[in-house]
Length: 387
Image (cartoon, rainbow, N blue to C red; front, side, top):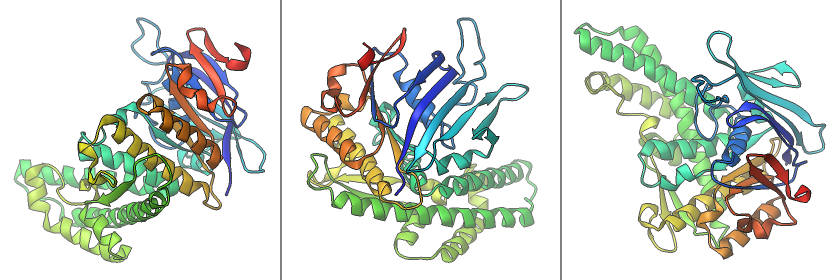
């Protein structure tokens, strides 16, 4: 186990911040202040210290600071000092250069590296108000949510998902162009793309299945917490094969064959109708014996929170990997007093660094003395000890 924590965080021309520095020194932090003060911006900055688009899923140019009248965001940067276990602190940084097309740059100890290297040092897991509608949204939103949990434990999952998406776009372009022109598509190239899809899709399905089984086992041990227990399921055909014990080679072969057989149908539909991009995550409230979609907003929030905490707990015991950093945006607002106290106890017991936001300081009474409180306002960031 390797405890990972941020010692400092500096934002430059990021969202509402011209420049801001936060120094948690490895402690958990609760951020409070009025709506629009910039609390979520700080969580987003931390989330960008990992591969991908962060907790808002924004484009590179969206997050740059803009003054009134400016239509394009400025070049921005997020820098941090992180420590993992007994190792010396590591300097991390990411940002955008706007010379020509916007380009993301990632640096570790001043050396430019691929974004995937960030996962060696920081693995954020987050829960945001956008996920309050998780059970009411399309299946794609639940897949994204679950894939982030998968990625936190298996960083290669993001690479396989990106390879799958790229091959799928190329395959669909060939099929739709052929359907529109009435000319046959290049079967050799289609076969090659379907082989790539089979390989990447099998790896994705396997990673999702492993994560689901591990998460369910973790949730089943958490009966003493005041959070509702969930029963998880993956509805996709290919994930079902993985859950039933099929190996990657078998899934790869069958998926590639299924895609080859579906060429006329997919070309006519304009989208691929089979593959791991079609599956869904189903969550059932165990104690109430009903689907999560039929539960109250507060119960749904508690179900998702328990899922995130279960993943954090599981990963906190992983060897040779940094512990997750938990980002919880406006999470306390939907929790009753008992669950807010339990959340504070859980964060403390897990020994993980967490960053929480809320409008009211009183939401974090149970964290006082156990986490750094920071007021966020138009004046900037003010630690409670300095108020």
